[in-house]
Length: 417
Image 1 (cartoon, rainbow, N blue to C red):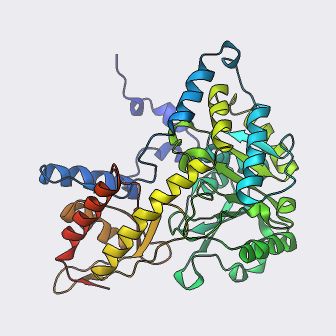
Image 2: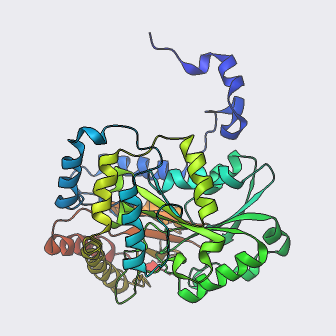
Image 3: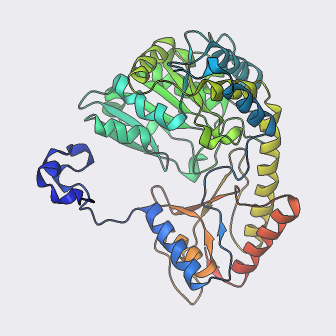
């Protein structure tokens, strides 16, 4: 018999305050991604004969390379790989160390004590606050950005200080604007480059400043780097750990989701400071029993074949060129990023002689409902929309067709910028 969980009043009274307590489920606010989902459904019903161009999805549009899939199949058939993986296999850690050395030039990483696997970056970001955050402690997060570390900081009774990413500062955080009392109180600083959603890339000089700032203020740096190898136009992949002193103040999170089209495989790693890696490993050991060994072995194969990522990056670079050119031809001011598959574009203020867009969300909803083009809006530090070049298209000609159709749908509208 189905039972309405909301009828059991005592259960509502037992729910933790961190998720709403007795008011859990009563919040009527509709959040950004739910609004996008509803708008897409409504647009598809109203215009069933027009295909929606989905540039809001932030995950690869293709399968992992056949050689990686074959390796998974081979390893999955071996009885010795069936058991718990706990905190990971040596083969994966060694492959991760080689990957950091060969792709990013990171020297001297000990795979035994300075690398541990994770079931993707998201769980790692969720677990790291458990290593450091006590009630009243503080984490610094950049906005706009990925909120998971901040969410769990708050779950633990901590606080979050938001550090804006602005176009004027090349979407890099200005550490000098952080008040002294915040810097002294902070335990964690979260960074993410190449950045989601702005697509911005960091520089060696910026990371060097981060190391200096972190050491001065005794703050731990968590650099989330799932897009780090997806670079183009001569911009070489850059690791926070390649900067002198970085390993003394923090860790870097890597994932195979974006760089190897392995999103659903849930595999990545945390690397850097051995004490942080050990603390994370202990928390992780109490949260999961490790990723399937066959997946780790397939991932190890992928990591020693970085040429696979280069081919993926070349595709995204080509699509960025097409999209940037199309948007600029119809009046936007888009600039191709040096990495990631995200293009961050300032939202127009409205349509000449027509409706006004007070926010990026207004513009995003217009694009979905009127033009059947899905993007993701960001209003935290200026009004921008994020396009993702992971749209579905097989081959260069189909890519050109998708972009040409986007340009056709928008080309007859006079936007005010």
